[in-house]
Image (tube, rainbow over all chains, first blue to last red):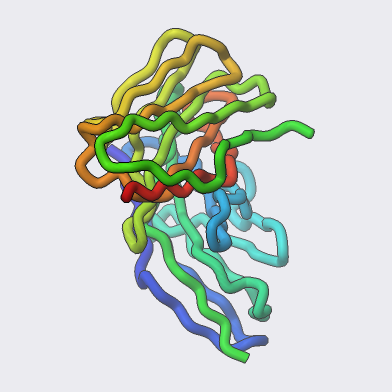
Length: 114
Length: 112
């Protein structure tokens, strides 16, 4: 069975500082991994995805994530936080088998201080 | 533009009434999903459908019903049996079950 754990339900950074949001997964087969962002009262928007190609995945708005199989992690980073990055972020996993659906983590709310 | 449309964005209903949330997609996706989101609880799967005329219960299906008569449409009915229906409801679709999901803008249901 697949599962996702996001460490830290709230993360606060200063504008211009590094953003690091943590995601660990469990999967019995090679996974597909995703990061989504949600702004208040909006749906989820895909930031980036890993589907067994390059382990370092670049997404929109300068976000990137690195798949580390040995650590079962897929942490999301951004070199310099902007105020507009304040939102909730969700990590999701899907096993690389037809018929399996996404499993979401509990989400991390990112706050950016001026 | 292709996408997923949920309507209405805000919905108010009296306790004991059934209410239907609309979800339409023009992405030609096979799979569609309904999630419920409560503050601090992430997304919980209510129902999903892989093909027309077929759907499966998710983790919290009690008090909800769905139909999938057309590929483009996956309406969700919140029945009076749902004990705590006030929440933010998200509809999503994907080309196949294990690919990324595309989300609508959500419907915030408030039951008074």
